[in-house]
Length: 416
Ligand code: ADP
Ligand code: MG
Figure 1 (cartoon, rainbow, N blue to C red):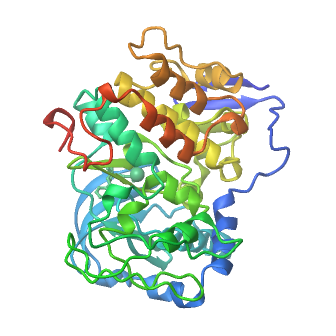
Figure 2 (cartoon, helix red, strand yellow):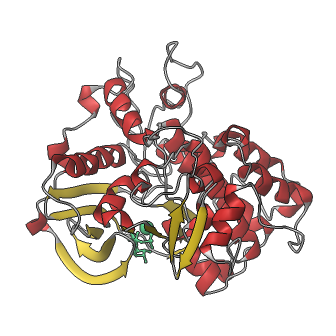
C-alpha cells in the first residue's frame, strides 16, 4: 500500500508501494518487436531508413490538437497526413531515448490494418521527432461520448466494441471471388497471424476493390501482396495488435476514431517514447496524472505508479483488456467510471480491487458481465480479445440491428 496526497492533478506518492511485478517490468512490446524482427523475414521488413521522413519534406498546416506529449498538425506528405510533433524538451542526445523511439516506430511500422491508423513514417533526427500517419476523418469516440453527448445504444456499442476487439477473419468480408484456400498452409510453430494469413490466401481479382488480389505466400510466410479489401480487413483492431505481440498501452476513447461507423485505432505502442518526451511528467516525489488517464489503468498498473517510474509500468495484453472495459463502460454509460472522484480516491479503490458500481446502469447482466471480466483484479482472469469477441457475438440477437458481420453504419446520432 502507499499513501497519496492530492495536489490538484498531481498526486504525491509516499510509503512502500509494492508492485506485483517485483522488479522493473519492462513493457513487453519492445521485446515483442525485437522478437518479431527475428520472426518476420528480411524481405518484408524494410530498414528503418526507409521509414525516415526528412522533416523538410513535410508541410505543416493548422494544429489539430495537443496531447500529453505532442502537438498534432494537419499536414501534407504525398497527400493529407497527420503529423505528431513530439515535445522533445526532455529528450536529450542520449542514445537510449532515441533507441526507444526507434523501437516503437519499428513496432508501429509493422502494422497494416483497416481498423488501425496507417503509419507512414517518422522524422527520427532530434530535436525534430515526429510520427506521420494517415489523417483520420470523423471524430474520436471521446468527442462523440463526452463532448457531443451522442448516445450509443447497446446495438451500436456492440458494433463498435466488435471492431475494436476483432482479430479473426470474418467470412462475409470476402467477396465471392476472393476466397480462402481450402487447406491451411501453416507449419507447426507459426504464430496465429501467419497461420490465419495462410488460411486466407486468396486468388484471382477481387471484385470489391478491383485490385489484383493475389496474396503470395512466400516460403518464409511473408505476405508479398495483399488484397487490401479482403485480406487486411479480415484482421481487426486489438485482436490484430495482440496477435502480433504489440501491446497498445494507451487504449482510450481519445485514441479511437469513428469514420462512417468504422473504428480506427491510433497511438498504439507509443507510450514509452511519449512518456520520455514529456519528461516522465514527474516533479520531486509527485506524479502528474493527466486528466482522464487513471480510469484506464488496471490495478497492477495503479499499484506500480511511482514518480519517475512510468516507463516501467507493467503493461501487458491484460492491461489493454482492462482499458477496453473502460471504453465499453463509456460507450454504454456516456461517462467515465469513478467520474468526479479525486485521483487519490481512484488509485486507492482500483489498487484494492474496488470497481465502479454498476447498480445505476441500465443494462442486462451479460453486458455488465463483460465489464466485470475486463476489470478483473487479477490480469490472468481477464479474457483475451478473441474470447471477448465471442462473448460479444453471443449477446442476444434481438439487440443487434443487423448482423454484426455486415458493414457497420451507425445512425447519425453517433456517427460523423
Ligand atoms: P490524445 O490522444 O491524448 O488526445 P494526441 O496527441 O494523440 O492526444 O492527439 C491530439 C489531437 O490530435 C487529438 O484531438 C486527436 O484527436 C488528434 N489526432 C491525433 N492523431 C490524429 C490523426 N491521425 N488524424 C486526425 N486527428 C488526429
Ligand atoms: Mg492520441
